[in-house]
Image (cartoon, rainbow, N blue to C red; front, side):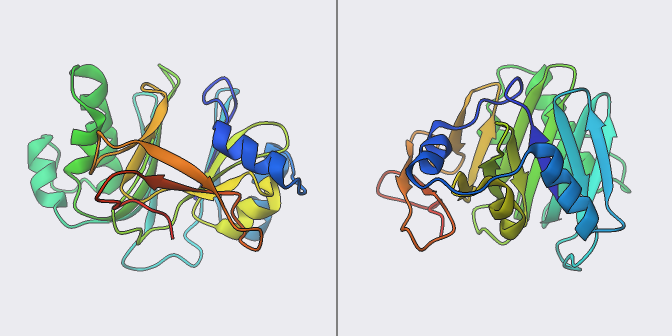
Length: 236
């Protein structure tokens, strides 16, 4: 799956900007990144949301246990990869039909977060049990909400394209070719929300997240780690 967002939606993370500056490497534009994804996945579906967001996904090479899915409702768009062990109880909690899947659940969970303030984002993600990564984009408020599970069973990466767009994908090689060293693994057990404006751990919400420069031989430019005695969201 692939999500690409302009700087009007999300400012490029300073840590990834710095990583790219330390070791300059080839990059391509957001449009070329999307074109590469579509060329490599002939059955892929791409959705342009306004002028500042692009979402795309394909079922190619997906895991049967961790499928990819997409849905849109009430100007909320969601890409979801993985499976929730407690989907049944969460559907009851959010009043969803028995036929609802994970991606529809995430849209409903996001709406609850948005409309029933104060409702901390870490509560929304912290109630999810299973292996997952998701990207939610709310066109009506230009809000982006991204998260991964604590076990990193579903990989997610983020980087900065040549024209300053922030891209998220489950394919490291795809982003490496587009973002150079302005690239990192999205830290497990963490979420990013433009409504908050920063990356946070939902398992240790009071702990600060820092980025450390990666080794030269690694494909990443930086590694994000949760500080504190229980570093549960360190990237590997």
